[in-house]
Image (cartoon, rainbow, N blue to C red; front, top):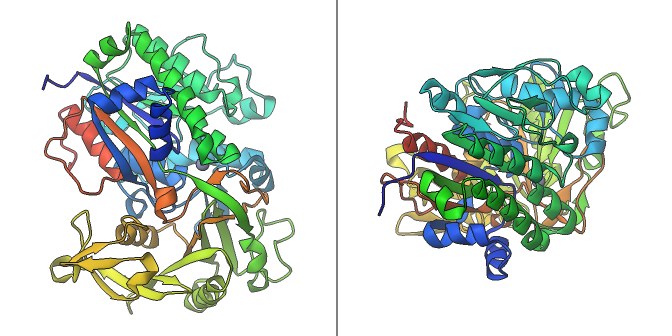
Length: 503
Ligand SMILES: [Zn+2]
């Protein structure tokens, strides 16, 4: 084995489904990814966060933490301190309901500056502190140590240029849509519209390779997710091929694939997968008589009743928050009873607390199979999960299609079910009740949009949760897991540059 290459590219191909990657390779549509798989390590079952949606997963990828620490709980969530919804862009119509300006400000600025916990440094921040030359293309998470001023001379719409006036802290080289660009590359992002974003990432990355501008690059290729939402997961064979073309473009800037790989380790990965959608759940309507807070406080609510809950759809997952602390437990019980009866809801999850309000146990309930109660077990746990964590469990293992063999808990239909559920439930910014949709179902967002006939993701189920991970030229440093997860990637990146991920 030759020594590891000095530089590292972390390429996130949004929603890349393992089976579709394999088909694209078999069809000859993804020659660069094929080269990485054949010469490296291919993991076909890298587990996403729960909810398996992009903001939560992106935060886990760049911090190596789950949301109990990084605090980004969903695509849409309720900000208790500010008493308002946060919407990161479920759809254009959903953004309109909350206000385009509000949605853009939350996504471009607040997500990194205010919502992502300061206690969980990103790989950019840690590498910047070690003087590694960092770089990033347009990605939800960009927080680093270098200041960037917005561009003044690009084709931003008037509304966007009025909003995007503030500087941000990012990696040393940052290219974010048409808003931030640390070099004059001549590359245009077309306002960051779907379908042209991969080309912008490829263009600026090729420029950076040509001019030797980074040691670590986060290369984001998001269009596969958009294409798969629209046309269904099967169509990824085409969009993974398109992503592969951009990888080839970046590598050709170094003189070719082999020349590039001699200088760069590569991690190519999905943040989550996608499953087909055939039906919707209108949770806002189903819970209307409990009193649902509408998108904008001053306008009409979602229901006639006085608002007592906030409803936060995140594609194939959703959260419900009790608005009044005094009735939190009673409201949670009402929401649990109702949601268990809704067609298309697979799992209902909540947290039981002790007399001091500390988390006591999590509950995963299914209408068909009953309740599974669980808590981190420490030394006295009953079972060990595939990642080696110990748990106490009681009740219906069938809720997660689980079995116990020789003290080991297996739940392949709901991978890493207990750790993902526990970190979601104990996240400070999560709702009181978490929901995971049944196969085929998606929660309509606040713009009443869903992806019927296409694909989506968000659930605890394997179909949304298992993404592709390819490691090429990356030293594993003894890290071997029988169940890889997206939160394993940030430590690999830090170790590549000689840093201790535990610090
Ligand atoms: Zn998506």
